Amino acid sequence: DAGVTQSPTHLIKTRGQQVTLRCSPKSGHDTVSWYQQALGQGPQFIFQYYEEEERQRGNFPDRFSGHQFPNYSSELNVNALLLGDSALYLCASSTSTGVGYTFGSGTRLTVV
Amino acid sequence: AQSVAQPEDQVNVAEGNPLTVKCTYSVSGNPYLFWYVQYPNRGLQFLLKYITGDNLVKGSYGFEAEFNKSQTSFHLKKPSALVSDSALYFCAVRDLRGGSYIPTFGRGTSLIVHP
Image 1: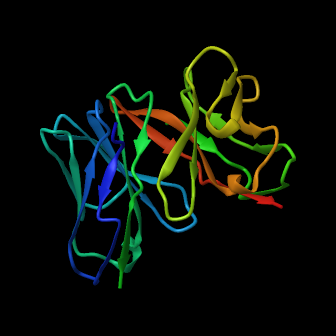
Image 2: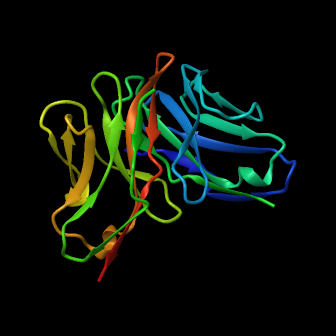
Image 3: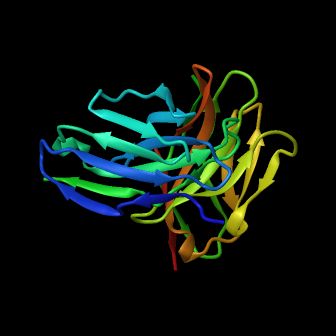
């Protein structure tokens, strides 16, 4: 049974560019949440998707956007990258009841 | 909003000794609490959760946690630490925001187990 799969594992982008990160949830899960984890900090909630809609959003600017597809997979898009966007981006999947969350290994984004 | 706090940035323990990583929570209603572990440059791995029932929860890799309602705590414990337990540990609570369940994390505690 595959867990949560994230791609790519690492990438380097230049300031001002745009990036797309991808996540495939664990089988049986229909809800995807995205987190940003800066070095030395805990994961910060970006947004959550359920039934192809953004259900809840954390304190992140509109440069951060997402999408969920009918197969429950999800994308995180970040526009106009800033140096401060450098972080580990984590995807977590769950059922809508939220009694268990499975995390992917993350995408390490470096903005130079 | 629900929240958790991890009062220690770092915990040091000798191999073979018992370890405790502290977490306190602030919730309205009954809390759903979780512990996760993170190894360098990796995602979070689930250790255990408390939803209801027995206050002592057993999880993966020999870890357990004790839910204490009167002290609003959910400390992670292990009777005998291993060097391989050295990692970042995160406490989390299931928060309800606008009808959606969102796991909210503490800032993490770095556990260092010395040989």
